[in-house]
Each structure stands twice: as C-alpha cells, then as structure tokens.
Length: 54
Image (cartoon, rainbow, N blue to C red; front, side):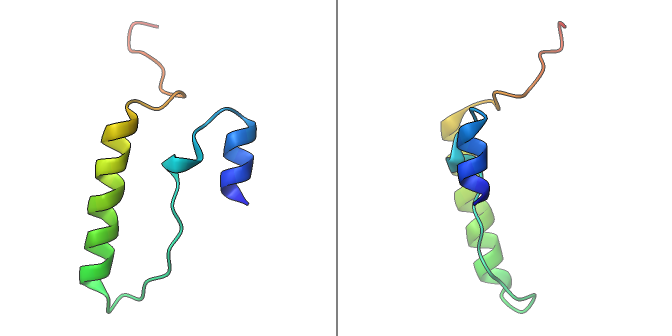
C-alpha cells in the first residue's frame, strides 16, 4: 500500500521495503540494511531532497 501511494506522488516505490524481523535476527536485519543501502545508492538522491543552494 505504501509503495502505491509513493508511486502516485512521484517517488520510486523501490525506495521503501517492508520486512518482518525480530530483535533476535540481527544478521537478517543487517543484511536487509546492506541491501537497502546498496539499492538507494543505485537509485541516487531522493527526488524530495532540497539542494543546499536553495
């Protein structure tokens, strides 16, 4: 649902992931964070980011 809303306002739905982890799954949480960081670097800056010159 969140991804549909983001797409409707012009934000790539790939910028959001939803997963279920318990606090006991540290390795899974770390892997999800690594994958999301790599994906965001691939996608580039957020379209909502305001440049510092403004």
